[in-house]
Length: 401
Image (cartoon, helix red, strand yellow):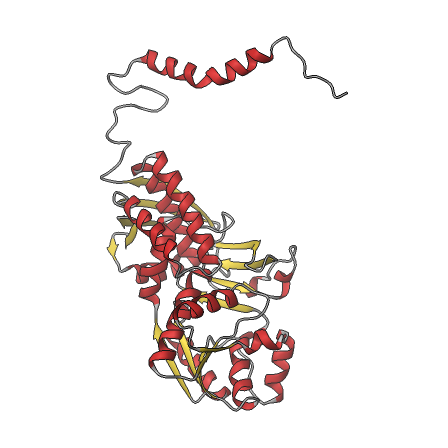
């Protein structure tokens, strides 16, 4: 068969090129989908590795702008952090990558498409859900999942057939993208282990501090330190500059789609800065009900994206609410990064609800307000608790007989 393989250049997909061609006799074309995180040199090396491992041809699709437009902008609008920590770096990409794999597979008339997802991770569900929704007629091959081989067994196979191992010998599973970089394997197979410093990538050796001013229009980042940039370029610059200061490094232990617990390390400098800045700007321009209701839906949006429901129509409904909520999220935030920690030092907006009130919190009530109104409001709020306490006065809880 003529097979189109979603290819990252890592251990799983490098193994697949060799196995599909040498063991199954298929003709393999590799497809690298650039969702960010790759330099020009790395993209060239990925192509070289694919061809050296047995691919007949190699394709590259630049999906960074589409990823931002269709996914990341909503993760920012919803302030999405899985487990209140992880900005869903990998989960943000997979549904779109599967869609592009299906799109290219159908357009170029391949007999089958293939992916390197394992049987014990989230990505297999994300890929299969997208492929079954968009292209149920496509034959989908998933040999890594079906064979159930360990990473050691894959490395041994590549050595046996004379194919070079990917960088670092496949010691870790590294996924780099526009919204962050994730690291899996080795120490992260337990809940206690931590990575050695040389296993980190974007935040390695960080020791300095710095300040960034991020400008937003209708909830979308449009400028960095006063320089207008398209969102992809802005995010890439923040990943580099804030990453050099140690921003966005963390560990995430969470629930997988399969119901088991999983653990990863991640580096998401741009996501850390942008989410912190965006959330604080929203506090200035939105009402409390707008923020809390929107963030509840944002959390639901992230959870559904995590389990592979990128193409479910309810996601579009949530996006419509998020878009409406961002109409006034325009302004800028000043963010300091020091010792890897992120602090939003100030925000301003032409829609500031703070500026249009002459009240000063802790000092002076708004002009024209009645001081007695607050007293009456407090007593109304306290009335249920007062009645509850009064009803129980002088009584004791009956003992069990």
